[in-house]
Image (cartoon, rainbow, N blue to C red; front, side, top):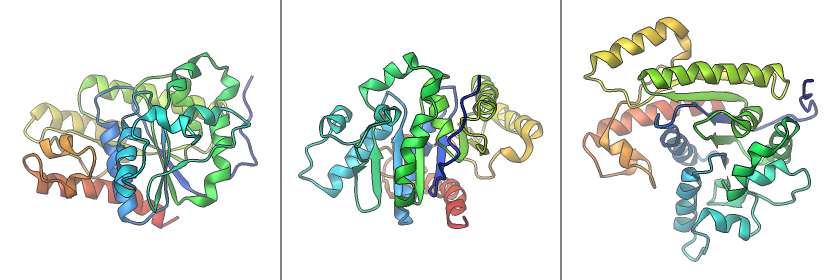
Length: 279
């Protein structure tokens, strides 16, 4: 039996989910830079971390500490203890908790330890985060959702809560195989009517080796296979990008080719976020 999509929910903010079922493709790096760029563009930004590893949460907590040096929340587990909304609580119909303010433009719904328990929930719980987010939709311009690199109910719930899917992808066979599995999951989310309007914005090629004949051939093959789903801007493998965790690569001073890395990453982020400005 299908779970009926909550028809009364109209999300006013534009929600992007970053997803690929293969780990190591730079999904969190792209998520972080989208957040950094959205804040520079003064977009009211809600960040949701569905990944139990909580790496995106840790980056946002660093930003919060920078904005408020007296803040005593420095670890993901402390967010829930302080009464702020966490991702697992999105699955609770009666939660009254609010996203944690990070700075003037950003708020966080942090990953928490309870996320590992979501695997035991019934499929009926999958649409609930989308419903829970409805009450915040008019408070933000954009929502950026990071996900775990695996199939399961956390990924389904994140897909159900979003408007658009962006899939960061490297050019190795495992990562491109992960795309096929992700596309199947997107179809399931649509077919189950958890989110029948979910759209694929595109595949963001990440960590491409410019000097690699294999990568160039794999990129050409992927474009032949899925056409315009491959996003125009490529993020190449750069040491500076790997080191950009607490601030964007265009503000960093670590790693070789930081100037080139900054141009490439900012162009990719702009191409996505300019979409918000035209809605």
